[in-house]
Length: 265
Ligand code: ZN
Ligand code: MN
Image (tube, rainbow, N blue to C red; front, side, top):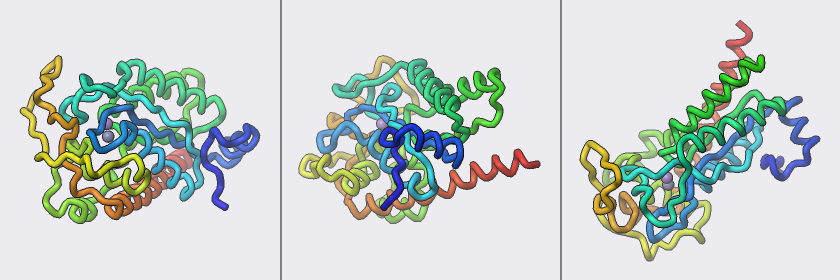
């Protein structure tokens, strides 16, 4: 039987033992509620890092915290824009404060190794801000050995995999919103949340090298997707999932070991 990794499913003595005695890392998926076109549910940004987190935790011996299911505002050139119906976002400082509060709570329990696994592009710097504030305040409280890794799962898709997934050419992660990557992963992990009969087939969106606020709705393709997911498949999803899980497991072992070695010097 696989070991339970989901924090909410553990009784507190077991949680305490694994956090304090075994010093297991805590992985926190972070995503968004955001429209992803006519062919897919609005929750891939939270389901995908959540699934990656569980698989990584089983591999390296870690715990998975409940996901942060809301994210920073969708930007037009990476998520279609925050004007679109269904997309439901937090102000930047709310997201940073939420991340800070959760990190400080896990620190209070005795956790010293955390990883935020991001599934929504726009979150990145507000998550970094929350991490920075938490580490600063924990230092004031005398805690100096608290270490946080922050990553976005798609950054672990290496060039070989990109060549296999996008034989026609890679459009770039920015316009992948609702595209081949997310749709393939959803077909692999949650096929009932995808309807390929509704998939848009338009060309990848192209934008000028500047942003306009408020957004000009006509810039976003009417589908809400920034590229077509017509070439998505469950097989591609399985390949992408595996490369992300292996890469992130390796990265976390490296990052946490580096810390242990640094504190020995
Ligand atoms: Zn997404
Ligand atoms: Mn997103």
